[in-house]
Image (tube, rainbow over all chains, first blue to last red; front, side, top):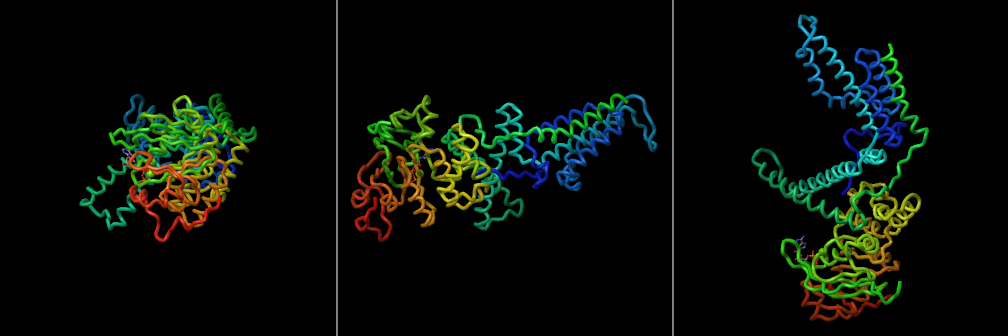
Length: 253
Length: 252
Ligand SMILES: Nc1ncnc2c1ncn2[C@@H]1O[C@H](COP(=O)(O)OP(=O)(O)OP(=O)(O)O)[C@@H](O)[C@H]1O
Ligand SMILES: [Mg+2]
């Protein structure tokens, strides 16, 4: 059982960013996003600087630009929404390439795009340098409600239980000469899916019994204490603090 | 602890599963401190069901289970689970953490151990089963026998007073099977071992219980039970081909 603890966003590495304790990274990203969101949208240069900051972090973390950009595609649905705004928003209008666009809509679109992209990029950086389990430890450390953290860990664990069962059933099917090659076979797959549900459920229950047998009473025991030194905190917080300076300048100019 | 208190005392234990299937019909036995006892019986006799009662995972039937004089009930559950270590029949049910090390650490950490002490406990347990170099591997990438050994380590790490093993020798290669026997012999704990491996029972456990159709059908010296052909046949117990318990000279 247990976890392929590497998720798809994670990129294995040994950079200084990878080595930071997870809760410092979580706090840093959260603070960065807050700063970005509270920057006035008219201060376009500030967003450019934020992007440069993230670029520096990506460089230190040795996350290649291509990797980062590919994962930014998560954002596409929001982009579509942003693109619509200049067309549908009310108010003063300008002509661009023969189209009449709303000025406030343009600003709104820019606002969503710039802030959204920076937020997503920061999160992608966090995810690509921090393993899922570490993230959970970090959340626990930051005193998030334990129940939330546990639900998240169980989702991960049982996700693995289910993929594992699925793999076994596929092996069993294929060993008996079955290969899904068309609509005709969907019946078999549907039945497997039903069996998969029952099997996973029962295995989940047995795993729960095993946990209870070893003294589990509702909260995960702390095995790896995550602690951060002052140096690690200041290293992690360098990002949001620099961003804050940019933001303050953006407001005063 | 005073030596007259039995390590494990089961009286009149009966149990039916929620679907109505009655698995235990009044089980009585008691095991003294430091004894190693084998629990034998055919498939479906109720052995696993009995084992799950020993630390209160199953309950709510008739009768009682006492561990070192403590009744297995809600009030004493935490204590009971610290004292009774169960190695399950299927190691996949036992191992649920992302790495071997974290899995072995789970029990002691739940009992409040941390830091170096926890680390040392984990290392010792893994060394005992010869799995120390697998500490950072995910359990589901190990072979079955390796997983079984890790499962044993997860329980050893809790330093239980009573060790209950559900078919520990199944799927082990002969060398691992012997090594496990050596580990069990070296421990100063009460052992209850469910097994279909009769030579193994003879080798390790001076005393055996035969559970058949939900009741204890026999309780006695392992060597005597295994040579009682009529009793063996009546409970679907068969010795492996060519094995004669009379010809085995027992070590201590
Ligand atoms: N969850 C369950 N629900 C209903 N009946 C069950 C359940 N688990 C086991 N049983 C039934 O209870 C009886 C005893 O099962 P148990 O698993 O205790 O047998 P066992 O002695 O451990 O057998 P084996 O040697 O095959 O492991 C069997 O008839 C079994 O079908
Ligand atoms: Mg069984």
